[in-house]
Length: 182
Image 1 (cartoon, rainbow, N blue to C red):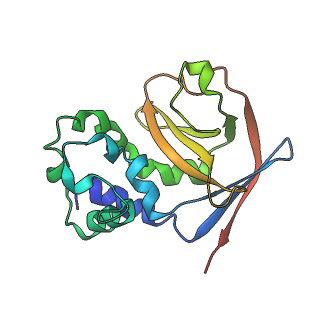
Image 2: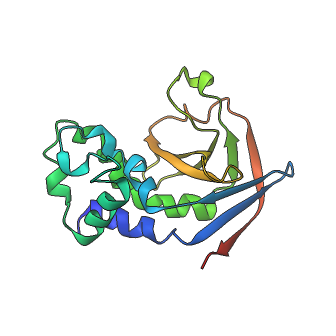
Image 3: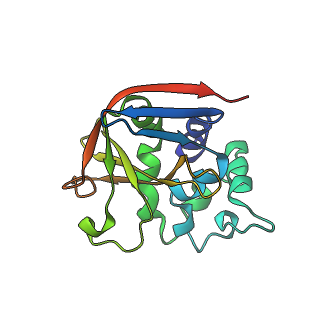
């Protein structure tokens, strides 16, 4: 199993559950994961020169790409051929840490993209954890378009610096629980 398939397999372990974080300011942050979220989290949209990972709703959806990665039909060797692979390699190397972030983050940051001079990031909150090799692992969350009381993991950004959380307002997680969906 290569790191791409391992990342997909670890990510699949988050499915079928709602993750609820009760913050010390009384706000509840509800989060869920689905197969089609993997595409953007892993940065596969950046590999525009690899047709097998180009998502489109008609014949190659993000969910379909995810299933092909799990089956081993799309492999790390396939995507390494991209001229842009180096842009996503750190994400893949740390992707299995997402489960750890979800299970043990201590603070939820409200995210203001203007504080990092970004006009493109649509996130509203960040879950964050340090990696074992001292990278800041940022899991950016945005409101789900279909279930507006829930967040989805929008993008995953490993960084050497804390520029995504620096000066952002952080609120401690008071409690967390998981609700199994059937």
